[in-house]
Image (cartoon, rainbow, N blue to C red; front, side, top):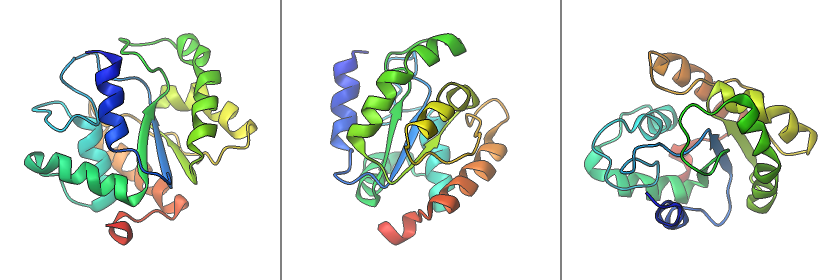
Length: 170
């Protein structure tokens, strides 16, 4: 999957004013899966659990485009630390991408930042905080491989700290 196709999909759902910026590790290696793709038949873990964490309900797969519009309209957006698909990036590889991430975050100018996946937290939290960016200090696992419940618990704590309530925005 080309970066251009992912960028076009993300641009469609990027809010003008980003209240809550989520930063994940990297786009999926599977070409047909990406957070902002309207039709993902399986393994859409991040979207599914972000939606559930924000709304308390499981998303309706047939309404993903509608759900993405609601996220956009609420001021939520997601980017990746590593902009290319990469299988199991090392901490060193992720850290090498932090300067570019800082630049992208400054351009986006979010009210709050939440890091998704422990490796993203380990690679980027200190740099984001030192740069004065509004990053929330919660180490949140990726919502797969048995970590779904822990993801929901820690993600909900982070959105509470941010004072972000999707129901108030849609």
